[in-house]
Image 1 (cartoon, rainbow, N blue to C red):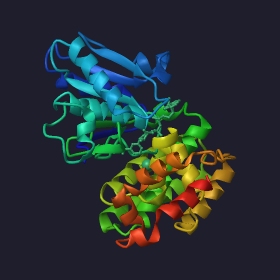
Image 2 (image 1 turned 90 degrees about the vertical axis):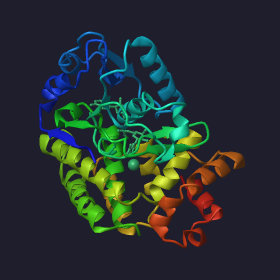
Image 3 (image 1 turned 180 degrees about the vertical axis):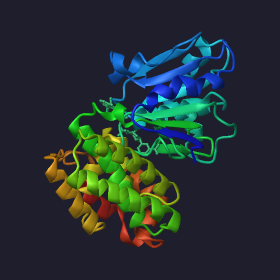
Image 4 (image 1 turned 45 degrees about the vertical axis):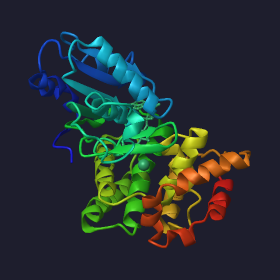
Length: 353
Ligand code: NAD
Ligand code: ZN
């Protein structure tokens, strides 16, 4: 679990005070990895106090994080710093948060990041790392994983060293998120809740977080509004609780299929989950019905026909990536899932998208 968290409108102002005692010495800088959407955002950037060799690296989140990108960043940081950094601070959405987690792990572990995709493969503790979400929904700020696309799979580095040492939850940072993206990333949280609460891995720990996040999502996406402060605060906590819920259970069919879309077509996580979930009435009847109501309240139009022109080879790859995520299928459909979800059935589902 994340050991330290501050919450509140304006809490980003505490960042410099939080970091100061963590500075090892003048040669060990803080490295800020920041979504490049904030590059000219004086309101945010002017509040970061850079000292000594501290550095901001702006990163585009147009594509999801790759293992090669992590390795390049780590090399750049090692070559440009006199000593191992005092800390890595990730500011942005799931993309930047995952990059910050992965870079902090790879600064203390040998080899390349794809070697650590999986469960509990990380040997050494990561360097101090701080997560500051600027969009709510993925739960990446609280989770035990950093999801990376590697040479042969999209899979997280899941380890006890992955979670942030410190998180700052300031909902004011989310105020500029465009409507569509707000919906897609918010729905990631909603889908985490449905998949956790409807899954066979469910337990009281996951349930207590999942139910709270589900209630928050319902109130935001059926009654709230993107621009109201209360909804922004609620969504930030929904994201946190949704992340906590899946941390002790698993996601399900939508995530398993969305990973296939991401791997073959590069479809991003939030929108990919929405495209898939929209077609999953058979598996999550009530959840999908409510999703459609939320979609219509905010006039969200999802892309259609994205799998229509795929070759057989591409579809097979998509199916194999998806079916490879065994714990997700087992959570969703139980131990006998292989009888219920076949390559043929999955192909039919993908063809609808
Ligand atoms: P994102 O980080 O990719 O950002 C989406 C878009 O929103 C980008 O264009 C970004 O520039 C923009 N944006 C972010 N904050 C903004 C702001 N305040 N104002 C204006 N624009 C803003 O989106 P995401 O949905 O948060 O993250 C998706 C990533 O998270 C995927 O790579 C996925 O694999 C990962 N993920 C990780 C976990 C985990 O537990 N580690 C869980 C779910 C998803
Ligand atoms: Zn997700």
